[in-house]
Image 1 (cartoon, rainbow, N blue to C red):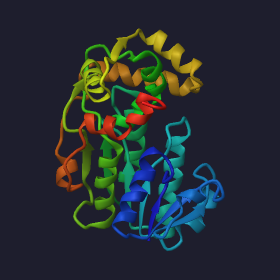
Image 2: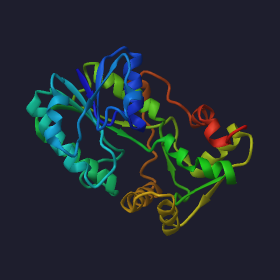
Image 3: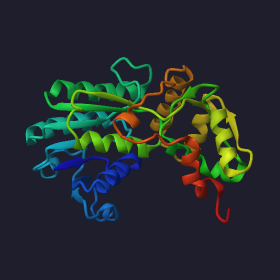
Image 4: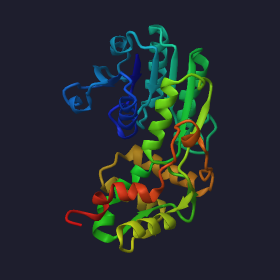
Length: 288
């Protein structure tokens, strides 16, 4: 049995769909089965547990051979990962795939990289077989700017002129599904990127091409970006760490392009234009 944590989130739900398309039965850990009922299906079994309460994990891990460890960005994530890995080993899980982050290491220059570096080290030291998935930023994160693109034909970020190789979560899911179901991926660390490194100005140009109107990228200072995130309802901790991530992006360190989507996920990587076409209704607005 395969267990997914985070199986109802942005990336986790796509991984669950990818496994279902492969007709692979799997278990998805949820905190509230009733709220997550829509995520159930022919190949998906929902099980209630809470990563913040390790005593609830035993039932979820019963009979599990492989697990995907995907935690939400939060101050509690390292402890949640530590507890899960220890409970998984105790339950007899043989293989854990960690959903990590681009550039993860204990000495990474950005907070999320260091935080995931802690989780990777915990898994490496556990004695369990593992694979690390290290995706770059998601195309889907631009859905957070959909309202601005609809109403103002613009989006903003403290990105400067940097380029980064963002990736569609569907491509990450393809890699994860093969890693979870095939031999030969143990002890590997896969950096997962899109097909090209783009600046936000180039991303605006691709929005414009697909949507048929001019979309502008507005570069903003870090403090203005953080104020906007807070005003939009983002928790202060998350807003601060997201601005820190953009600081890392501006260093130019996230522009590497890899072939892991093609080689491991066995598909051509999705281009940014295709992502916009697929979600055009969100960016163009009602009636467009």
